[in-house]
Length: 151
Image (cartoon, rainbow, N blue to C red; front, side, top):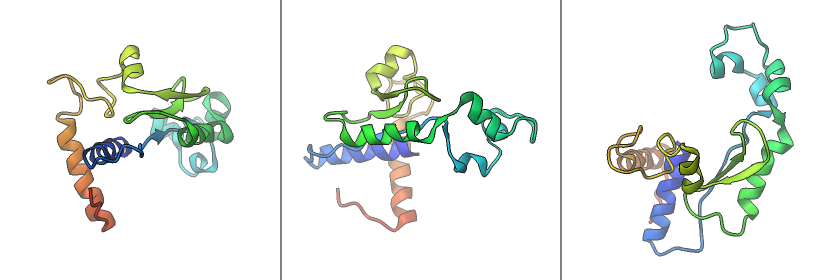
């Protein structure tokens, strides 16, 4: 949902002639925070039956420190030119140093079909018509938040 909103926001900013603002995303990866402990992430993320692997054990094995996860948001704020439709996330998706991800870098990794930020060639999308999905999401976001963006 955030990808669709950000992508549509960038398109609307450019269509309105606003080139000095770029909306970007950040993903903390699997950051070890209290938010994860409040629900059974072993089951919700991996389908492991309830109680077999506590979230704290997953934190120890797969997680990264909460401050490391926050670095992606910091980098998104201070990067001099991330470009539209880019996001900052852990290099290894779940953990690792903050990395600028762009449609081009995802395409090199072979992830472009599954990533809603990338506009695929006709017929290659797992998401269907991404522009249509993004516009419908934009309209719903405005309706649910009672907000009207003027561009």
